[in-house]
Image (cartoon, rainbow, N blue to C red; front, side, top):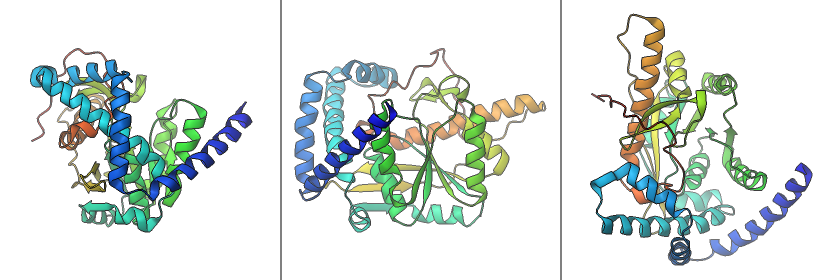
Length: 316
């Protein structure tokens, strides 16, 4: 079965590569038009619409009027349609083509962090065409390893992984025990490598800690806090945003300061710092997502955690 899946994935990969060459020669405005048409049909036929509506209710509650929520839905599905064609188009882009369509802000923050020789952790989200952001980082001469959950479905997983390993990229998938993931990440950081953690997905069981995301409890990977406790590695938020002309801006923020607990008990201190810093990292990502919220991936079930309210921390 695995061999059949691999053969099927290779065949589909070839078909997608052919389609990507066709899409690459279309003006970016045409990609937007095709995306708007696809987005209209996705919304009309209700593709994961209930999940998106539930997420909007959780995140914004009474902050949006019914008409604003309706417009938000239209804009988000427009984004999803564009993203579909962009992900296919990504496959055949060269280094020069990627860099021509990339606009960097804050790259000096990454260079300064790397100069400390402690490795660098970038924290990101599924915003705009995040896969393009990864390619842009690698093609700009910054090899990275991304920590992200596996995609359900062998064929989809193989297709996405082949993309992520282009331009010097590599992938780590969280193990059932976070010890394996932690060991791999620590080894990379000791070599002054860049590790990128996608932190906006639900973290199951012992992998996560409940923190506020858009004001509602969400289970979030806690491995990052454990690493910074051990290494003092700088943590920088990164954001990809699609611009009106179809190109993308990749923004790298300054390092997020590590918050220390004042608890005299070592176990309590560790647990409090785990919560405080995971919350702080999540708030930093939320601030970036809020700049263009319709380009975030609202079709993911982010808020699976117990919804008992959490007292937010003071970032100051």
